Image 1 (cartoon, rainbow, N blue to C red):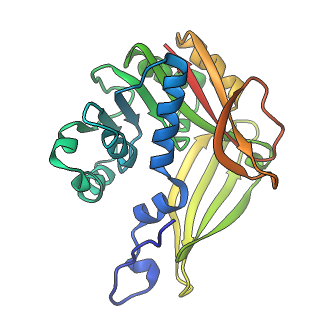
Image 2: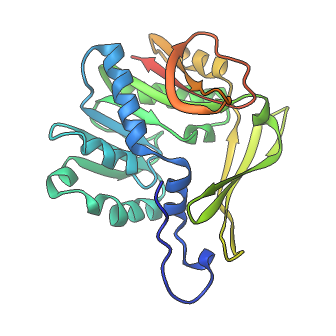
Image 3: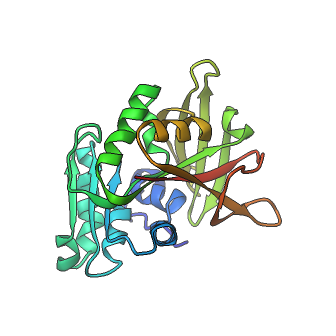
Length: 273
């Protein structure tokens, strides 16, 4: 990881920091993720995917990385938040070459309403789709994602779980120049709703509290698999994260049908149209 560039000038480090830069440094590795999903697609379909739609794209960093893959790679990013899309255009899209920018389209729209050209791969990452809290909403979103795929397209989503996912707790991770704090603030066992925050803390003792807040339903893999099948997908595969000798995730994933009773796990579901 590289140190986040915090602007010079008056004020605390928290006042001078950019929450989107901090977020990406803490929880995203778009180079690794794009490489991973492209490999998974090729392993399943036997050829490389060339077109990608990133739902809930935020800063569109994954879409930017996708078009860097080659001259015949195109991407569409969809997000409802104009401010974050504008940030992505200024700070991520602007760093692409002109020909790469021409192969990337950002759309401000609700994923439940957007219509785009069909693509090889649709992805909804960082658990963003968990904003849908009922089976009907989730099934409808999955169905719309399926409609956006080419005939041999694949839909990728990630998920987390394990016994620790139900705890109300804080997890602190030291980064280069700041501390990232994942805060599971509230879990409701009856509804399955979960409220999570991201906080940041700096060496000068300043903090950014609730830089990001998420109101989700904590979905399980069996529920998601069933809903994908109900939405019309022909097959749903699960990819489980490998663990090292200390039990920590390695970032490598393998297809599995059972998983393990880890206290904290991350997995991908890959749905075939």
